[in-house]
Length: 139
Image (cartoon, rainbow, N blue to C red; front, side):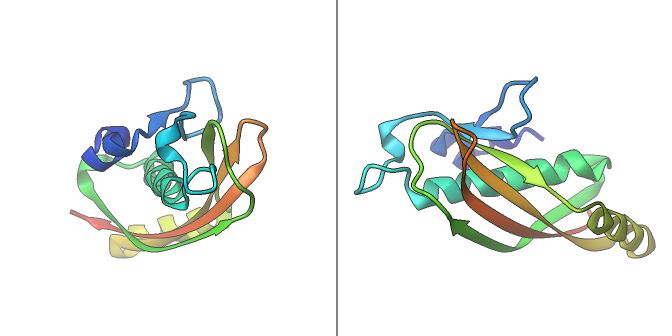
């Protein structure tokens, strides 16, 4: 599934990072994202991080997308610095979390996984840190 093709993500303007980049998704520098103080609106940053969490999950599941059903259970974001210009995301996970997830999924055909998405500006400074918890089951 191409998460950038979901109607809401198209509406927001979420784009894929370049193939050779280590980022997931990005928002271009556009005045439509700005808030009342001239920085990127918190909702735009949250939407970018949330879409990126779905993509990060998909990339790391290593399973047939047609056989799984992921549901976002929890989201938490901390805005660290005002953001301007282009922003992009990176995913961070702990290997032991994924090992535990795969073990549980093999036994029960359902499991939870939590990981972090960082939102960075053009200077590679983290402007927001988001944590997501997904529940994954078979379709």
